[in-house]
Amino acid sequence: MSEILKSVEDHYEVRGLLDAILDALRATGKDTNALQPIDLAPVDEFHVRGREATIELAALARLPPNLHVLDVGCGLGGSARYLASAHGCQMTGVDLTHEYIEVATALAKLVGLSAAVTFQQGSALDLPFNDNSFDVAWTEHAQMNIEDKIRFYGEIARVLKPKGTFVFHDVFQGPSGAPHFPVPWAEQTSISFLATPERVRQILDEAGFQIIHWIDATPPAITWFDGAIERLRTTGPLPLGLHLLMGKTSQLKFTNQMQNLKENRVVMIQAVVRKT
Ligand SMILES: C[S@@+](CC[C@H](N)C(=O)[O-])C[C@H]1O[C@@H](n2cnc3c(N)ncnc32)[C@H](O)[C@@H]1O
Image 1: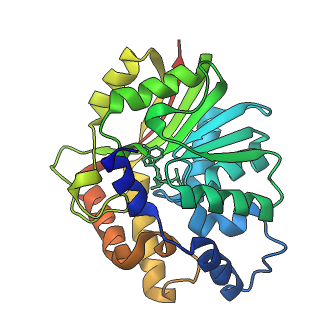
Image 2: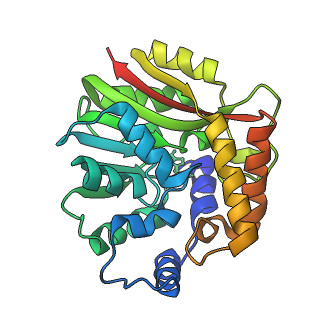
C-alpha cells in the first residue's frame, strides 16, 4: 500500500469502533439484538446531511430493485444497507479502511442484511472487480482523499456495465480558496485533494459519462449544519454520532466544514451520470 493510502487509512482507523458503537446504542436505550438499519444512521452515514442525503440521492437516481450496486469508499456501509433494505439492491461495498470493513460487515449481520450486502477491503484506485461488473456505482464523500481523480473516475467507468449509472454526492473545491483544516476527511492538507466541479465534469466527460443530473447541494448542506448546531446547543451531543469516527478534533472538524460551506471554500454536488 502506498504511503498516502496508509496515511488515509490511519486517519479513519479508530480501534475499538464496533464496541464504541454498541455501547452508544445501548446508552440510547436500543436493544442491540433487535436493531433496524435506521438505528445506525447517526453513525454509519459519514457525510454531510447523513441519511437524508442518501434517501434523496437514491430517489434522484430512480433505482429499480435487484440491481447490483457498488459503493466505492463505503465506510461503515450505511448507504449500502439503506439501498439494500429500501430499494432491494444487491450491494457490494469497497473501502480502504480495514476496520470500517469489519464494522460494516458486523453491522450488516446485526440488522439481518448479510445476504444482501457484502463488504471488502480495497482501493478505489485499483478496484478488485472485473470490467463491466455492476449496474450502478455509488459514492459519497470518499474522493476527497484521492489525488488521481482521472484514475478514480476511470476505475468506476471500467467496472460499470455499458449504460450503467454512476451516482454520487460529493465535496468539491469552491471558488473562495483552500478549506480550513481539520476537516472530517483530513487533519491537514497532506491527504486532502479537492477538485473543482468543473474539473470533475471534464474528467467524467473524458471517461465516457453523460450527465443526467448535476445539482448544487450546497444550500441544503448549510441549512442542515445550522440545524445540527442548534440541536447540539439545546440537547447536547447524543451518545451515537459521527464524533465516534472523528476523534479528538471532532467538534472543530464539524464547525470548519460548516464554515467552509458558508465561505464557498467547498461545494456539494449531487449527480447522476450514465456510462455511454
Ligand atoms: C468520509 S468517509 C465516507 C464513508 C461513506 N461513503 C459514507 O458516506 O458514510 C470516507 C471514506 O473513504 C474511504 N477512502 C478514502 N480513500 C479511499 C481509497 N483510495 N479507496 C477506497 N476507500 C477510500 C475511507 O476509508 C472512508 O471510509
